[in-house]
Image 1 (spheres, rainbow, N blue to C red):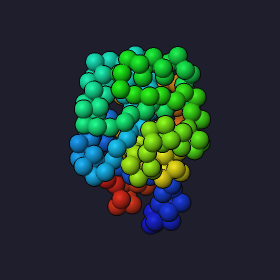
Image 2: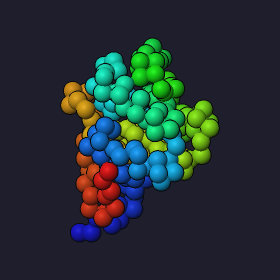
Image 3: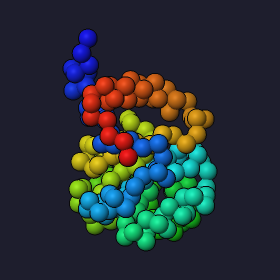
Amino acid sequence: MSVAPFSILFKQFFPDAVSDSAYSIDFEALYEKGCRGIIFDVDNTLVPHGAPADGRAKKLFERLHEIGYKCLVLSNNKEPRVKSFAESVRYADYIHKAGKPGKKGYFAALKRMCLRRKEALFVGDQIFTDVWGAKRCGIFSILVKPIDKREEIQIVLKRIPERFVLWLYGRSGKLRRL
C-alpha cells in the first residue's frame, strides 16, 4: 500500500527539517541563507522539562547573539518559568502562555522580533504543538529529539501519533536532516 495518500493528509505536521538536537543545528549556514530570528520552545528542546538554563543553553544563546540572530522563547508554560529561562540565557525575549499550536503566539513572536515569516525559524520537540503551529504560520520548522524521556502523561500520549507522522515523513522522501 502506498503511503502517498497518508502523506498528503499529514503533511501539515511534517517539519521542514529534523535534527538530533537544537545544539547540533548549523545556525551559521541558516543565517547565510537569510534567517535572522529563531523562536525556541524550552522544555525538552533546550533543557529537560522544568530545568533551569544550563551552561550549554547560555553558550548557545551567546553564540546566536554573536552571529546576529534575534531570539525568542515561545512557551505554553507560565511566566515565572519562561521569564526565568529567558533572563538566564540573556539574549532572548519571551512569550509565555503562547497557546501553541495556535497562531497568535507565533505571530506575536515575529512582531516582537520585527521579522517576516521567511526570516524566522522555529525549533521545538513536539509535532502537534511546535511544528504544527509554526507551519500554520508559514515559519520554517525544525523538529529536534526530546532531551529527556521522562515527560508528563499528556505529552507521552502525543508521542504515539507523532511516531506515525514521523514514519510517514520518512517514507515521503521529503525528510531533511540538519
